[in-house]
Amino acid sequence: MSPSARNRLRNLSGFPLILLGFYLTLNFSIHAQITFTNLPNPPDPQNAIFSCPYGIDKTNIVGSYDNRGRTRGFLFDGSKWSTLEVPRGKKGTYARSISGTNIVGIYYDRSVKMHGFIYNGVTYRILDHPKGADGTLLTGISGTNIVGNYYDATSITHGFIYNGFSYSEIEDRKGVNGTYIMGIDNDRVIGVFKTVDGIWNSFLYDHADFKTLSNPTATCGTLANGISGTNIVGTYYDAGGLSHGFLFNGIEFKTIDHPLGTVGTGINAISGNRIVGWYRDATNSHGFIATLPTP
Image (cartoon, rainbow, N blue to C red; front, side, top):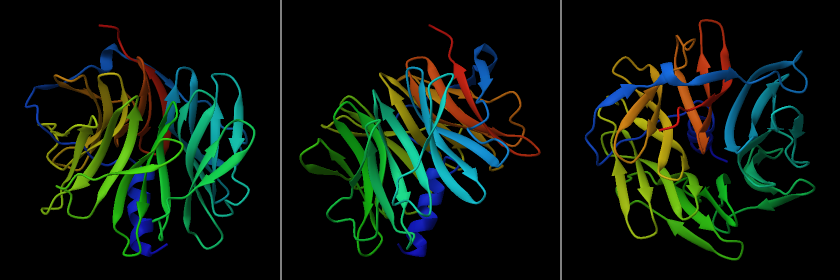
């Protein structure tokens, strides 16, 4: 995989990026009404540096953690940890999304090329897009539908949905350097793209139309990371470059900042009224689980 493709992956699979759009609404904070709980220590905490949750389905959470310079995936069911490592993933495994007993994500092989995988709780299956000459990234799963991105031979990124039999491309033509698909819930897909002015924007795709999402507070861009029903979560950046989590309920944006996140907050996924993400304080980054207030 080319250095440019790896750099884009670090942006999308590490600390979240960006979301912009078609609703001009007030953005207000609701974090005081949210119950935050830090993600417990991973399976081998004495060597782990940082655990980042990327996906949630009911009480099951998936993500990755760094251990002695190598990244491993994890499944946390609320009480028990399971480490996820693709046998071919000699350079790291990232679990990105979960639906039922199925988990999707990426791994790096010995040559640091990126591949997609599906794990059903017993075996790993490799899923590489046929056109993914420079790598494949799986980011979301909902039932039998899987979404992700592939890098072509020129390192341009293309989004796709895979239904278990065939691939369909998802391309928002407003993106100058390709489309990144970030998540799916039933038949609704979210993703991001970069405009000619270098700002990251987000969209909602319902298989009929692309709707650009715009957070009026996001002066430096926004990233939509997760979707559940009519709710979309992600991260936006203010004029000073500080990251904030957000919830968009289809009408308005609500800022969600972890109370200890003095150096930033990001939200990666949502399932019902539960969200997962990360915050950074003066010393390190920390994963968290939170429960949203009911309407």
